[in-house]
Image 1 (cartoon, rainbow, N blue to C red):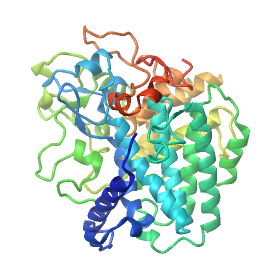
Image 2 (cartoon, helix red, strand yellow; image 1 turned 120 degrees about the vertical axis):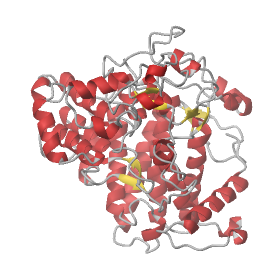
Image 3 (cartoon, rainbow, N blue to C red; image 1 turned 30 degrees about the horizontal axis):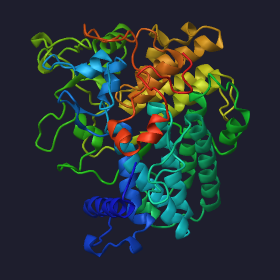
Image 4 (spheres, helix red, strand yellow; image 1 turned 180 degrees about the vertical axis):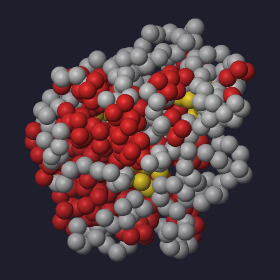
Length: 512
């Protein structure tokens, strides 16, 4: 966590200028050689920061793990039964045995903190220069990524973070205290945006590469993150009335077609494609980007057994044979299930090099809303739990681009055993788990971290398959990542103060 603030901030701005200057949608022309710390502004940092938020949400840092494999969030997609390695490869040993160490996925930590550092500086620069709109946007995205951090690691540096001169070795805040303060930060951001909704700076049309100056949409995104925080802690705080009232009063959560997506104007050039597409679509050369991850046989069967038309959008037919074929997670290499004989990531996810990169999708938001209604929470939605649930499922079809999406969703909801509301049961608990089971399907490729969170929180789905690696060291999927080894090296006293942490040390909201 020790950071040279001037160096990192300067580097961030150079990246932002480099990105923004070459994009077709952003007409900002600066000379990087003229950049100094004194003239760095919120407008200069924000586009790159927002691009970083999208990349960290969708794929994280695509680096090489201990077994030599390129990684994004594929590790958790594998754990959750969404993806599985192609039979052309050995599975990652650490990952598929659950014997993770402090070096497993150790780029998560700096990747998230580097983007959070950019957002912190946007917030500070905007505060100094009286730019409340940009300050609020930064605060909302900070809340989004800090929730990611807490959900993955638990206690993390928060109140002393990004202040290397004052706190060269920042203390760790308790996860539950961070959650509580994120609610406060979101409230502040919503209050700021409510005041400036009719006075948004004209520069936001280009600088804000998510909602282009639409303060009301940012308020809805803040409400969605607030609801996600409340849903996550629902097993320990069953009726957070005061916080729910704020969501209702401030216009509710993101609805159909209102996904928060960042798009600086992605190009079909190296390093300039949409992050998810560059990981799972086609490279500018025309070569397939992803040869490692394939559909998990479990997920293929779930979709096939319920005649779910989203199968052809989550996944692609195998190059050889044209069928939808998955692999079993943890299996040794097997030519019968090599990359050409199994299903890659599909066209509903990897759509095009210039697609918007999602941060918070309308699909996730509407499933959060459906669970809230099923719990009896008043978030300003006037319909029933069934209606909210069916609208969320339908939005998944629409978001993926399923042909005749609304009709296809209606047929699925009326026919599929795992989707018909008649099978949801009559108790609140059974209905919540029924909704979250469908949310699990809808999150394939979009947000596997959210699927993992729900699994830890509710144990849904109950039949997520364990790795079949014979060296598997546990009968349970890890419930957290370990603090990275680099943190022990630079902030040892504070990380060691967290006690003995292992893959089964639960996050505070995990009561399963």
